[in-house]
Image (cartoon, rainbow, N blue to C red; front, side, top):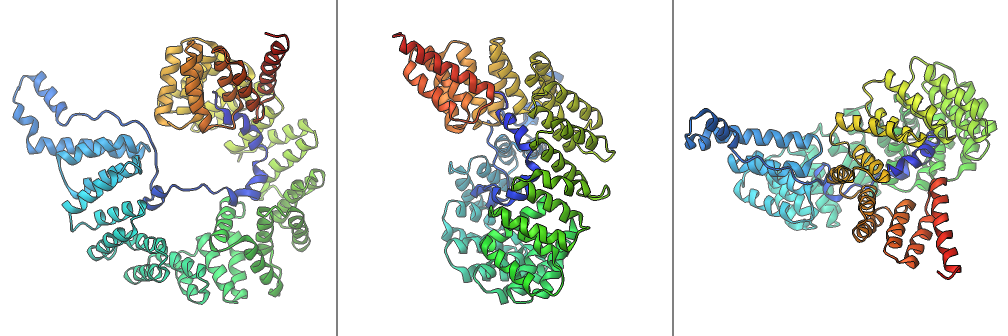
Length: 614
């Protein structure tokens, strides 16, 4: 399957400037337990082949005729080879290939055993596959081999905590703190351990110990404040929130935490100053919006946050545009869009020259279905405003909703002609064209962007996608092969070329090799499994095709084309009844119009044959 998500990306891009304000807080990615505790990434790939220790030197000596095998395993050679293996592993980690790094760390440790390499080996085993138990066994072994190494006790404690063995984890985390009282992560993990045991006082005590051991620990003060707020101990939470903010006053998240804590302690006047300060850090930052909403959710509910802000607005003697902006964002998050518009209109009445107020009321009007009323607000945003580009984009979207596509495209073109235009501005222009089925023009826009932003190599991939959409399949293949030439591990490009070949029924062996490379990099990608299944179908191995496509459906049940492919395989196997069920399931998914039409034709064909008595 071609990059199916791209078909939805056109719609996503031309609505993203509204969605980022409406839903950025509710789409926080869920973090895997192992990665959260270890603060790392979980990337599953097939391990790379380990270079046998010392064999490079052996080969060199053999070719030079020295022939002395003892030099292959001399202490100096072992150290050098161990360092080489370690550096290879570190490079793989840097490239997010954790599983590939594991055997290299193991080889390095076996050649030159030490606690530092041992810790790296344990971490790689855990992150490569948190559920197979090897990580916990390795961590236990290392903690026994190096009983006075604080890092290894910390690591073992973290592994035990991931396995829900909090009592045993507690012992090793405490040992890590005794061995190294400055090991910040040991205290914070111990606090998590106590929270898992529902021992809140002990959790608070752990982070208090951290702040005593290191009064400059921002993380310690933040965690302490959050736990106390969640326990409704606002008075105690005030001091740690203040300490965290004072250590890094230019951090919006810390300012927000301190402001909330001030407000909970009925110090609204002081809190208002901080809320207003939040918008001076970066007036156009959607990341700040997400942080704010996430923090509100973490510390309580959005309705509670709304009540807090209403109280502060009511008790304030001056205008509070910053607070009203937060209220609008929370109302959007709660889908109370009419109320949000009312607050936005109050805001623009109070600060009519504010570019942020102009932009906000425009977005609020679009959300409630009044794009024609929003356009004047977007147009009034001054050229020097940091929100001008966002305003022009939203203006173009409003024109598109009104059916004025040519005007929308002209505005997008003007946006890109600005000397300060960004890559995203070009992407928006191309996506507008694509939404109007002007894919060839989209190719031209992306080509222009490539000339202007030569370092943005992902544009080359996008050019290939637009070429395929425009019907230039050969040009798309050439472009995608260029992407692969630049990066042999670009999984989407590998899959894209494989699917192009599969669709044409040519070079199927190469197609299979390409998509298998993509699956090594992303083994749980249903789209890639669909490509592999379709290759098997083209090879007329319908049983293998069906089993592969069924696996793809487990991962991507909302992709209509995968259901269609499974139906095709069943039809080839002579099972019309189940094939029809697959087609009908695929028809219920979100599909392109051409995919929808094709699937419907297959359903009609089977139904008409049944009616004819075939």
